[in-house]
Length: 393
Image (cartoon, rainbow, N blue to C red; front, side, top):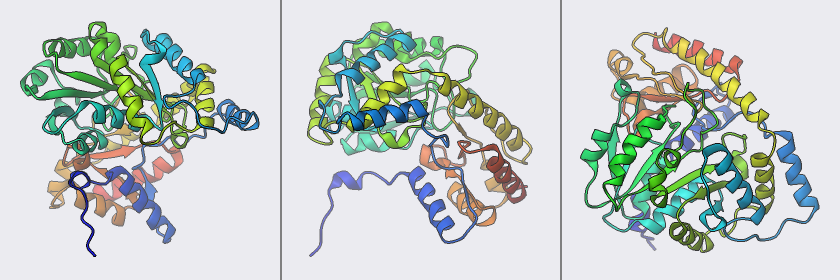
């Protein structure tokens, strides 16, 4: 018997970042010395006070279903976080909790997009921004911003890309994979374009908000454009800032109509996020934030080291990041010099020759670039950079 898969699943591709991480783990298991710089995951342990909150929740018997959209305690912690960090005021019916920020994004696309609708995604982009809308039958319009403009789209580019079918604009600042950051003025200028097109909703993914070191304070699109709050969904989570990737807690704030619809679709998929993880997330959001500052200081130190080392490799150009734990070096001249076909061939070469796993930029809409995660200790990074310099020089 032949099983035919749906057209829906055939529209999307497996996550390239997960694939590279799995391949590196597979090679290590087979005995090969491989350094994985592909994963988007902090190497730090979850802070102790957050883990203790989870233990207390278990001892208190908080191991049952919760409300689909999250416990009242976590929703209030999310509301306090938005007000404290972003100056955004949300009511309880305007926020919801999901099993990771990715599920918030998936929920939003499911309730907003129909076949033939259009989503504008600035490139380079996180891989799932492309494939989640496709599951919904939407068409993705890439809007490329290269290193010459610090990987940031302009209002003119946005205006030229908008069509009558545009329903959603996805923004991510600080950006995965580039570490690029929009200023308040730049976000306000993009907001002026959006304001002229009433059919467009903006989804701003602020998951790297606290892993940040730009001169100007972090600003969310919703903060810069209060007049568009009824058309803006702010997505965030605890995975990156608190080293809680496995706890699977994301959250969103937005208009009641969209949040209610997202709650409905979640009620027919995962239902609530894990109850114990929700208790831990309350401790993360309401607790002492010194742990976040300490981790960010280390990420900044690693960033500065790796960027300086990349600049010593012939034909490699890299724009410095202002947040996240990624750099996105331009390897196009290296590929040409080594007479390779593309960045995928370069990825395989670096795995074989240097034992270093990077993610090809083509997965992020930027062929010829490579994403390098520095979410690992400096000793390992120094070994990785020595190997890369030998393989690429």
